[in-house]
Structure formats: structure tokens, C-alpha cells
Amino acid sequence: MIELQDVSKKYPTGQIALYNVNLKLRKGEMAFLTGISGAGKSTLLKLIALLDRPTAGNVLIDNFDISQLKQNQVANYRRSIGVIFQDHHLLSDRTIFDNVALPLMISGMRPQDIERRVHAALDKVNLLVKEKDYPMMLSAGEKQRVGIARAVVNKPSIILADEPTGNLDPVLAADIMQTFLQFNDLGATILIASHDQPLVERMGKRIIELQKVKSR
Amino acid sequence: MSKTRNQATSPLRSRLSQHNQAFHQSLNQLWQHSLSTWITLAAIAIALSLPAGLYILLGNLKTLTDDKREVPTISVYINQNITAQQAQDRAELLSELNDIENVKLIKREDGLKHMQQVAGVQDIIDTVGGNPLPHVLVVTPRMSLFGDPGVDLDALAQRLKNYPEVDSVQMDIEWVQRLRAIMQIAERVVLVVAVLLGLTVLLVVGNTIRLNIENRKEEIEVTQLVGATTSYIRRPFLYSGFWYGFFGGILSLVIVHVSLLFLIPPVDKLANLYGSQYNITGLGVWVTLIILVSSSFLGLSGAWLAVSQHLRKQFAMQDT
Image (cartoon, rainbow over all chains, first blue to last red; front, side, top):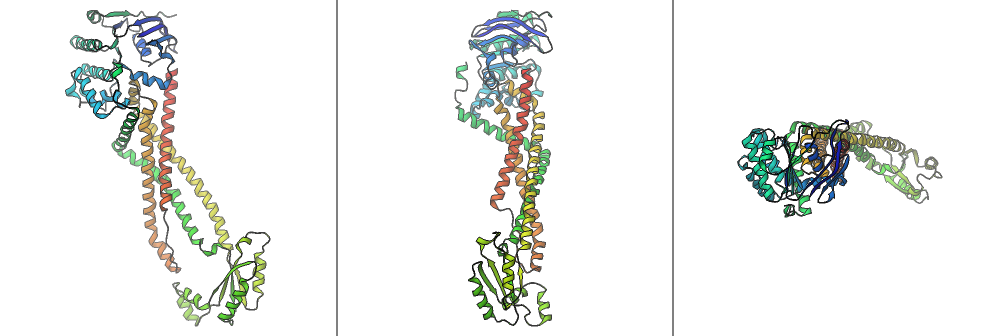
């Protein structure tokens, strides 16, 4: 389902983030990306989410090379995946409900359908009672769960998460991982970047370790 | 999972829903930032009021010259000792000439009645005693010949002067022609002013939307991350630009009409002093609509330029 073929990413500064990466992730599979800081975990997720483009190689989703998508097709592609960011990327002037509803509003869904889906997503991450709150009123763990709810509200087939438990205590981190397991059980393909090696090993899922590219 | 995505949303319903969102979102934005909104609307309204006001001024000046004097006429003053019947006979003879369209007799009694309606003139008439006015023939040259270099109006006037009943002849066209030439220049000036101030509206709205974009940069980035198209990002800003133009246009109409109400009493007073029934005319329905449509279009265009520039810059940065 997700395939990277000889993917490299070199930034204009000359820094090489990824070099000749090959990776295959089956449909419905859940895997963890690990590696030391700077190994390219976030870059790899960005390439799959088309938030960035590789300088070499191909990123294939369902055997289609997404690197070839034009700018106006990228938005449609992004709506088909769910991305969870380490720094949440929540809109501070909107309620939790509105933040989670954002992908559905972009899709042009009817208000009553939006309400139903948002409530279901917030219920899954146990934040339904906070739907009228604003992000600044939430803890880091709650914000992360809002980010997860927003990523899954559109029922994406692929979920990408960049350090979703980065700033959380072990109990909350384990709680969030359980949430991912539930989505995986529903059929979503999930790729999670994490540097929390013990937590990742406890999950019993495939672990892909990225090595930091040495300067050339 | 993806198969169930957006199952209940048709493309048309989806587009309508997005427009509905942008419509309300843009109005909310204007409402939430009411001070800056009013400042922008005032700038737009003042910029639009000036050409609209000049247009009204020109329109009214045109009305002043839009009566029969627009047609070149020659006033033929008949000798005092000529009777009304003799003047009428001469009028009929003249009207049969090839180069004359028609001749209208204004009897001295009618002339006096008209003069008496002009404030202040009655005293002069009383002082003079009796009716000092002559019969007048208002001669209109044949229209098809007017402007033909072969037709010599001066020669016609000279011929009219040679009739024994005629005391003097006066051409009534020069001042109108001069005024019309001046007004043609004024019309061009109004057009140039309107274009320049229209550009000002475009820039004002463009700059306001650019600032809005800067303030909502984070929101734009997040919506792009979760799959917003450029149309989706552009839409609320286009609505905002439209509202700025539309409401600015309405405000400019209010300014123009309030100014007119302010001007009507002194103009009426002045017109009365000249014995005229002249009334100031406003913009009319069509010009009002043109102003509203133009201002809305300018607002929309300004917003389009600002958002396009932002998106172009953003895509260029992403490509590098």
C-alpha cells in the first residue's frame, strides 16, 4: 500500500535527510519508524503526506507515484490521509469541535453529518465533554488526542503520526497508542514516528529503524 | 475505510456548503474586526464618492444646457413699431426658407410675463414703464445642415438682419458650444479621476486582504495540511473583498446622497432668484447599480490579487 523506492531527500542547504530509502508497508499494517534525532523520521512522513517532495526516488500509494501529483491534486490526496503532528497544529481561536471539524468542512460535508462524525471522533479519544473548549484550555495530552481525532474524523485509510507521544507521560502515551491500535483494528494503515524505543517495543508491531545519513 | 468517506456529500452540495461557510466566515471576520472594517469601508467610500459626486455635478450642468438652446438658434429681435401680426407674417415667410428648420414667435406680452416671474425684474419693469420688450423670432437652422461647413450661420444671421422688420440678431449658440467643450474636458477629467480612484479601491482592498492573510497565516497553513484546496483557501478572502467593495459602495452612495440633501436648499434658493424651476438630479437607479457592481467587482479583484500573490509565493517556497 505504501512503498518508497530509493527515496532521497536533500535540502537546499546541502543537508541530506534521507538517502536511498526503500520501504514497503502493507494495507492495514501498523509500523513504527524509529531512529535517533535527525535520522529523517519526520522527513519520511512528510514525503508520504506530500508536505514535501523527494529529490530522488518514488513514493507510491496503492502503486501510484504520488510525487507526480500536481499542486491542485495534492489537496485531494491529503484529505485521504490523516496526519498527526507532534506540535498539534490546532487553531487557537477555534473550539475543539471546530478544530476536529476542519477536514470535514473542507470536504464540504453537511453540518448535521459534520456534527455526527466529530462527536464520534471526539468520543473515541474521550474528549466529547471538551468540545466547546479552546485548545489553550487543554493539557498537552488532550491536545494530542484532539489532533488524533482531527486526523481520523475523515475516516482515512492511512494515518501518519509524528512523535504523537513526544511530550506525554508514560500512562498517557500508552493510552494514545491504544487508540492507534483501535484504528488499526478498523483497517487503517498506520505509520508512527517515535523515538520512545521501550514504548514502541511494547506494542509488538513492526519497527523500521532509520539511520542518520553521514555527511558527504 | 476510505470507501465510506464523504458518502453523503454530492459535489454540488459540497460546493454550496463551502460557499455557505465562506459567506458566513467572511461576514463574521468583518464583524469581529469592526474598527478596521469601518476604516477600510470609509476609505473605499470616500474614494468612490468623489467621482460619483463629480458625475452628479456634470449631470446637473448638462441638464442646465439640455433644453432647446442645445440646438443652435438665432434670436431675431423685431423693431418696436412692428405689430404681432406683422411679426407672425415674417415668421411664416422665414420658415419656408430651405436653410431654416422652424421659426417661433415670442410675443412681447409673453416675454414680459416670463420676465415678471424672475425675482427683482418687476421693479425694473415698473421703473421703465410699459413693456420695453420687442417681439422675438427664435430661428432654428435646418438640423441636417448644422455642422456642415457649407452652411454659414453668420451669413444666415446677416441675411436675417437685412429684413426691414428686424432690429437686431443674436446668435445663441456660442456660449453653449463653449460650455459643452468645457464639459467634454470635465467628463474626461471625471473619467480619469474615476479610474484612478477605482485603482485606489483595488489597492485598499488588496492591502486589507493581504493583512488579513498575514493575520490568518497559521489557519491557512493548517487547513492546507488537512487538505484544503486553493479554492477553499481563496474563497473566504474573496467574499471579504466582495463585502468591502459592496458595503464601501453603499457607504459612498450614502455620502453622496447626504451631500446632495445638504446642497438642495441653497441650490433651490439660487434657482428661485433666477426664476428657474431647476432641481438637482441625483444618481438614478442605473448609475447607483453601476457604482455598486463596480465597487463589488473592484473589491473582489483586489482580494483575488492579494490571495493569488500569497499562494504563488507559498507554492514557490514549497517548490524550493
